[in-house]
Length: 380
Image (tube, rainbow, N blue to C red; front, top):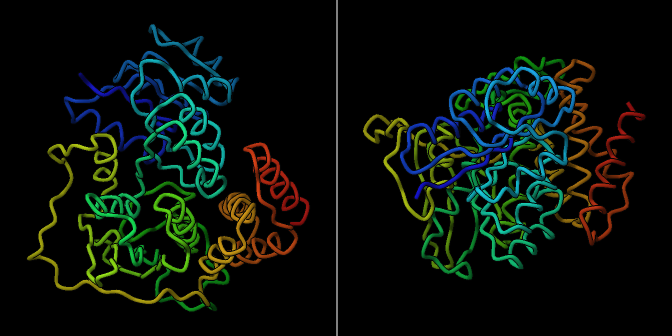
């Protein structure tokens, strides 16, 4: 039997690479695709993969797609359509690769309906990690990480007792500005930040990589995924992006996962777990590696990483504030409305303004998310 896959965010970088993985496999098929509004790309995907359902968040675009579509594919729309797609009976795995906290509700809905989650939307756990993990345990649902770092840790922990973990070591490439001085980045433009040296990623995550906020969000995500406190989660800069992350155990041994910097590897592992299939990524040739370097992150030049750690230390709704603020600020930076260092500046302001509390529902965190977005838009 083939595994039936639903992809939320099929026209983004992760979504498109997931479709490549599925196309190269005989063990998977696509039954559902969801996008924000890119119906031209979605229409091409429908013709190739013939899903039974698609969802378009932008309702006017959904209507346009319905009017021009010549297939039996059902078209759903809005958040309601996204949630409906997340729980269709035909699916085995829901891969959530939408960008931002908009991915929270579909993940939660899929979990409550017993769907296995392949999670590339890190904001889900940053915003509502405690609640999401409680729901996953309650419904006996697996959350399989798709981020290369968390997939690496997950692979390193196969067959291991989590009680033996001494430390999780997340590797960071350092982004396009590694080694640059603070003064040289004051007026740096967004298109320079998009030029990642190792990874082919979407715009938002590329900016997050440039500020090191991406690694900060991954620290928060790792805390919830692997039930490890923040003082046992370390970040090291590894420019080659060959070691994707490591686990140090209480006997002082370290297990690492290595591979070429290609997202199709962790995507395939999540979709085929607990099995491994023949890979279609570039093989890593160890004889061609001249060196593997590791450095301490420069949090003076890149303060977003420390802000994420501080949000995790404070706990409650503070990570939600950091995430929501970062989403707004990255969008403004991409539109050249603010400068590079306005991102950490206004994140810190939002953290000072917010009084963190322990959330008890998704509605609590969504209300905080809405507050920080509105506050920032009035503040800038």
